Image 1 (cartoon, rainbow, N blue to C red):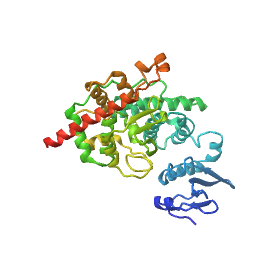
Image 2: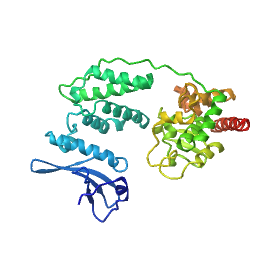
Image 3: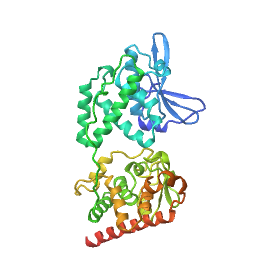
Length: 384
């Protein structure tokens, strides 16, 4: 019997002694599958002529939620009505149909998982933006001028965002061109949209005071994110996606799969860091928002926390961290280690044979910086 599935119904679905399939009343053909082990997944059942077919959707619940499963099921069923057989196409490693959405789905299945997690995050975001721009369109119907206009739209978000979107779009269409007959990438001849300018913005101590105070006032995940970025000098995704199993008794241990350069990174925990982390709910996989899904929409975080500080980004906090350590007299090679940079002192032959990682000195650097921020916050509170 079909059930009007809701997130709550899916979450509370209990396993039995055998595999249980529950059809969705809203999207006929979509089934929630619950294995005896408790694992939950999705499948679409349909017919090609007289023959019953089954397409297993990629991604188990909750990675593939109810909303996304319904969208994927609708796309598959639409392709069936157009004469396609998405299950057979999947077995042959082909897109379910000639829509852009189907090719993006295949690209995400075949190519994106091979990228480092940090890269996957922005690639997936750009692919979703591309799909939204050409929703319902066939791959071969998209023209060069339309892609140019789509890239131009992203320049409103800054030159870096435009360049990232251009890179991902160009790589995706090139991948399709290499696999498809009679298809030429519409992005092949499109030039880089803007030159990325290297930022040199460093927040002053006064601005760090304002940011810290505003973060305390905002509270929640947004406030904790900004305070941890100030204290650790990490990249925003490293903290936004901070998992509970990455926090040990005395440090944050980021694996190489979560860092930009692929090198593991240890951040010694200071009392002030513990205070920030201790203010967050103790539940879920991800620390910042106490959820099994990482927090998103970092662009709004800055506006929630400190809209009065002119012309700054969350990444500027990393540069401010490095500059602040320098002002405190920390040696350059210790700052590089605190930032997880593998350059200069630790590059080439020196990087191979120089095994001493200055753990004591790095911990002292983080502690000095935390103490500096604590004094700034106390001064701000006293002045108020």
